[in-house]
Image 1 (cartoon, rainbow, N blue to C red):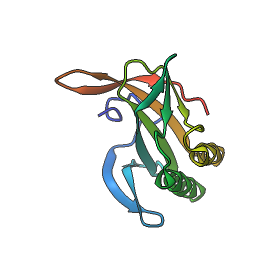
Image 2: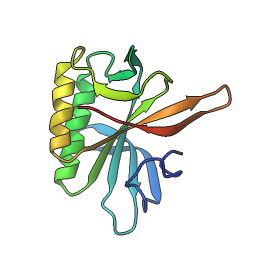
Image 3: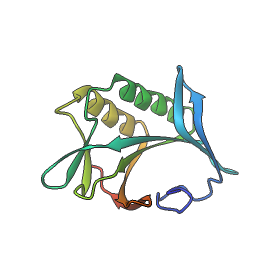
Image 4: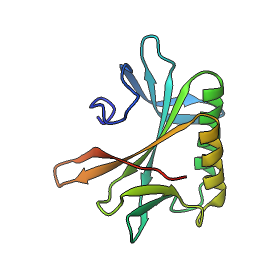
Length: 144
């Protein structure tokens, strides 16, 4: 819904959205975006649950070798001419910025920075949570 509503900059023109597409070495990407004349865009969504006072949200909240592998596979897709976007979904009102949780999983943090250097893009969307809906509506900064 956030992609279709244009809440993630740079994704205009992607008309096809396919969930859970197999790619890489035995992985699945959350969303594969396609559009006429555009390179495919591999989108991985991660839920940010950890936060500290001061509005900083962290990912991951536990060691995640799988998460690091996803970043490596996304970077490999970029090397093949595709786009790759990691989206942090923040369902907390107290988070104003997202950072890698190097204090929890330094390997993930290092892998994220390497993936960014290889062309993987990153964005964070803050949600408005109500009893009726969860709406991703605010773009948050990501500091790596």
